[in-house]
Image 1 (cartoon, rainbow, N blue to C red):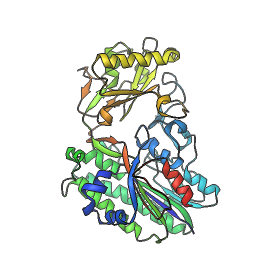
Image 2: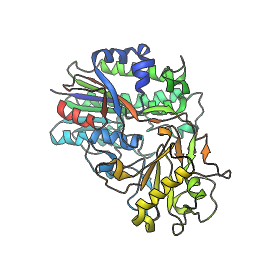
Image 3: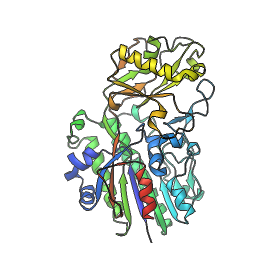
Image 4: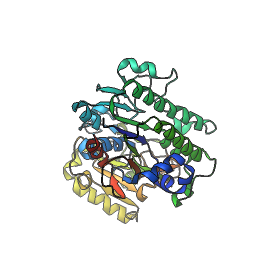
Length: 422
């Protein structure tokens, strides 16, 4: 029978796997010798959510109607912002297509699959699952989870560094071992997908600036150890796969040094475009905004998001032109790019921001917080310690797929590769 196995390693860097550590990752190096491989260009924005679902639906974030980790059904001045769930996506993932074809699937850790869906096979959701919930199908498979099961390392940016590497390995081991146990219970699976979030955490915590120049992580450093651990874990898993199984190893984006942060809301305040009801010395939230007097409010993230007040949405194009003029006046036009949803997506669904804000090709993070210094530029992430931002280049390694591969592909191509392989 035809089988496709997809191993997703969130944030894994092509420059490290294909280049600087290739001779130190024996299992991945062997796969590269036997496989097609290349760059997998991430979605815009290159964010874990919605990038993975773009990969597994074949749709852009605009078609999915999901543009980041947060979601709203209306304007932020009226509707609360909440975490994204599976129910917010306006397209069906590849495992639902497989289900309609009568195939069994085993899906573990794929963002954002909470709450678990019923399908032929098994599903364990991902790090977006609320703490204290058990989200698994069939429900009695909860017995497969370790007693101290964790969906993620809570507050991982704030944890002491001395033991966090072992904690990451424990987190990763939980997903891998549950994936293997589910596969054992479903020997007739046709599609198997597992996504390991641990690499993303490791790179945010331990990325080194020299890696941007193509060098390897420092020998025996935490990141070097984590890449070695991941390579060994992949090697162990591959021993259980039949030689005829089609294999994909993919990442949703890569990593690069975080070179600071831009205070989006402070910039708006400086130009009188954001008026607050009262003094704020932290993240500016919708409830802090005097929407009658303000034109804009900004959300932080690897890519910032701008939301116009309701009364200005009818003149949005002129107001965005005004922002671009202000960036030029401030000498920031070469560093900061404003992009509207209609400029980047063939179809726009859901409730997108009015504009995205990209700074220094994703090297600078946008933050929504302000402080007493009223500074536009800060070194620290307002969410906690962070060494890396996302890079829009992820990777793919493809073995046993009857495809014509190019050096670069889009995330969305993976959906069609799986369809054709099954």
